[in-house]
Image (cartoon, rainbow over all chains, first blue to last red; front, side, top):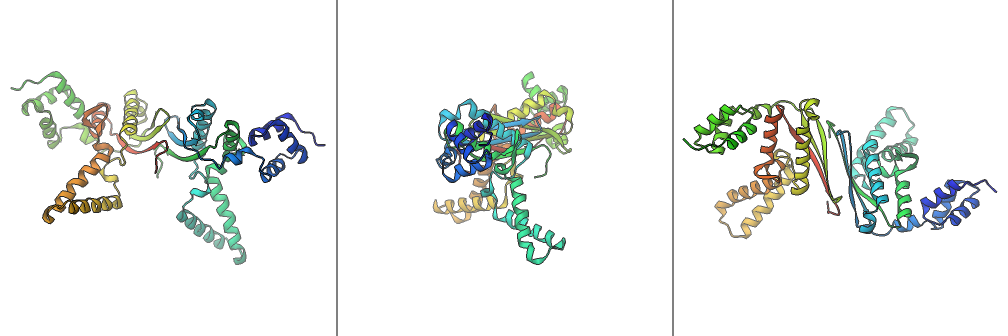
Length: 199
Length: 199
């Protein structure tokens, strides 16, 4: 049996919202491989976070963060009840998200928010680049798709590495709090202004 | 000679950036009529604020305001130097502007920011309304222009009555601070998010 330490078990527990025993069982079955354990739990529908992610989120708060009067961020984060909206864990979580946005300057919340015109213009740009670089014609479509995926993942809040813990994405950090708070949480939209930037 | 009290003289002085004597002279010449005195000074190019308004503003701050975690505002206000950007009068002024935006929900900074498509759709709507109300054909253009002017003035930050002193517009409040701080000040842009609003 793989050597599984308590911190890893706790991390899986927090991320999925299950009990300690279930988290340990999943890790044992995956020979201590964290990602594999998480993947298996998701496949089996064991993670409470994923189930909660489907429920409606209508309460919440507008969080804000201001860095040195030079970068300002607003973010709307929804949850299900005013009770959670007032919870300190939730308000600190929203502050973290706002701080992350200030530091990492995402352009979209998630892939769903990318407009058709942004996709079209990025695709044209990468296609031109691949051709200019002399890539074989048969490979261009695949290369361009790869570049698009990377380009937008870097610009989507949910796919960015979380600044306070780059081992997880912001999306993972949200799921961790869905599990921790027992309610669906949705980062709905944000606004970021930097002094003097061209918009 | 009209009875002109010191508060009125000071107010004109603050708004225009001239000295007390010049402000008093202007008021005496206008028989104590504040608006007339201001108008005459502007015509003669005597107000320093108007002259400063043409200079470039590149420093500044991103101000923010959060009402009860339900309405958040960011505003970029530019001035000419970091020295003024750090001045407490300036930072308090920016906070006031942000608070005003939270309360009054403008859609534009000024008339210059209204898009052609917003004008076109508002014009069509008011024209339909005037016709439906049975207004005479010959009057419709004039009526629609009046409705457009009112509609957009209500939605432009610079034309809104300032919440802390509805006797002046936000634009007047900006000019007052241009005079007070001796630098051009430009409200460049803002963002306002209200919890749960449809955008």
